[in-house]
Amino acid sequence: MPLDLAEEGPHGPIASNAALLFDRRGEVAGIYRKLHPVAGVGSDELEAGITPGRYVPVFKCDFGNLGVQIYWDIQFDDGWDALGRSGAEIVAWPSQSPATLLPAARAFRHRYYVISSVWRDNATIFEPTGMVAAQILPPERILVHQLDLSYSILGWSSFLRNGQALKDKFGEKVGFHYSTREDMGLFWSNEPATTIGAMIRSIGGEELDRQVERNGRLHATAGAVKPLRD
Image (cartoon, rainbow, N blue to C red; front, side):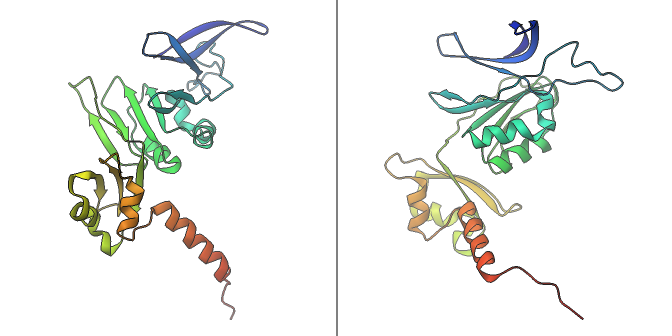
């Protein structure tokens, strides 16, 4: 829940644009103070005197590791990068902007879910692929969607058949969201006794990020490309 938060600073009172995390008992479990308050066009004042935050915490919740960014934080890399390095699995983005391109890019780059909370146009859950997992548009007001944080991302392979190879072998024990347009999909296991990684290995598959890393090593071994000379 974002709000203006007044606190005592080292040199007197300060105000922050802050998001409060409440636990299941209704008690404050954490606070994130917005790193990048906005100075509007023609002004050098940050949101009527708001002080920028200094820290980007990751909150260890019972459902996973949660980070927060607020509104104009989307324009700057530092907070999103820090959350990725610190192991965030979900980033909540309360915002006045209904933007979808930038949060999708943040989710894709750092391989975490981004959940937007917006009062106009849409509220959206972006997968670690950058694709939309769920979205509501007015007049809907409440978005409910179940996430599985034990997932794998697969790129296109002929034997995968856009995910059908896993479906043929495991049926309803496997779930996935695959895009033929993006040649990529998010896969998860609906069977507690079998991980999605084990399912993928059983058909000879390879997660996309591992495939990219392996190819990078092969490129390095093969040597850098040299320009042709006349």
